[in-house]
Image (cartoon, rainbow, N blue to C red; front, top):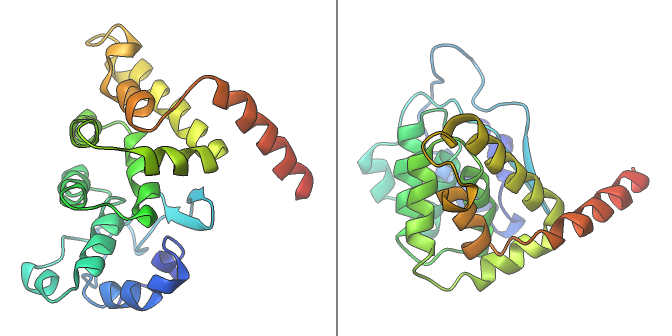
Length: 203
């Protein structure tokens, strides 16, 4: 099966058996242009580390998914939110957002929210704006350096791809998602910079 170590770093230790169960149903092949199941770089949010992309050749079969527990299905959706195919990222993010979202899934939601596929960003905003997002706001405040990096990346993609169709940043779905649902404020940047400086000194 795809190397378990690639995915277990993206979840709390107490989910290790569930992550192993999910890895057991993943397709056994990678896409045509690589032999690696995941990129060798990614994003860190607190204690978890997410691969930037996974390169599993296809989606999991419906039969395999039906055998998973509710928690394992959520883990599966998180893993596939890092898939190289944007349609699969969107499909699994939509499925993840249909139920109650556990805190350990927050990094996956934040990560895909700073990317360039507008339909996914709009999907997340449309889902979250209707709900209380205090927990994910708290998670963002507790991971300010990564969160502010995500905000900057979102703005960069708007500037590169969407500024023509949405001239005002404040009208862009990604902006509204970060400010309204994730609790971003400009004052976070100074605190994030201070935390980065402290972390750098510790290394």
